[in-house]
Length: 139
Image 1 (cartoon, rainbow, N blue to C red):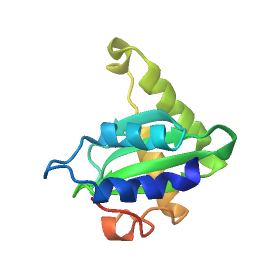
Image 2: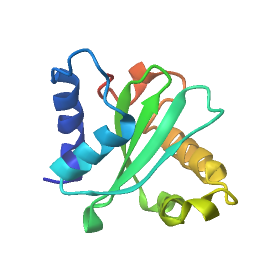
Image 3: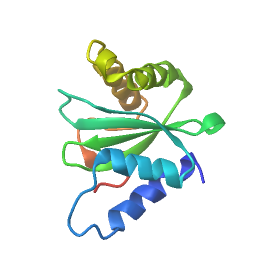
Image 4: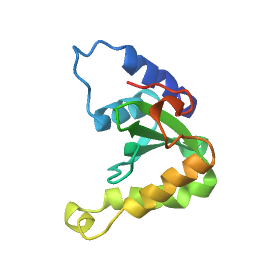
């Protein structure tokens, strides 16, 4: 499996019987990475954004990177990330790798906001609502 199967795993998750409970975003992203042979690069909250709660990235080596976003209503969608955004992916990944004591003094929010803006500008996500996230799954 690989990056092209992220949407299938999102669909599988949406159809799974969870007993009425929503799994945490980080668990769902980890599940996607595991099932598609990827590696979670980062998973962060996006405080202050009117439409997005969280963003994560899953790396697939030479096959690229896929962003997974959660909107304010809890819907999830995926979007491929192009090479022009890899510096922001690297910055967010480096922040997540820091010890917690160092994370407190360094902010990731500017990089996350820039990444979301680049994805929106490229037409990969719609910042105005979950229904338009590339036609992907909403929980």
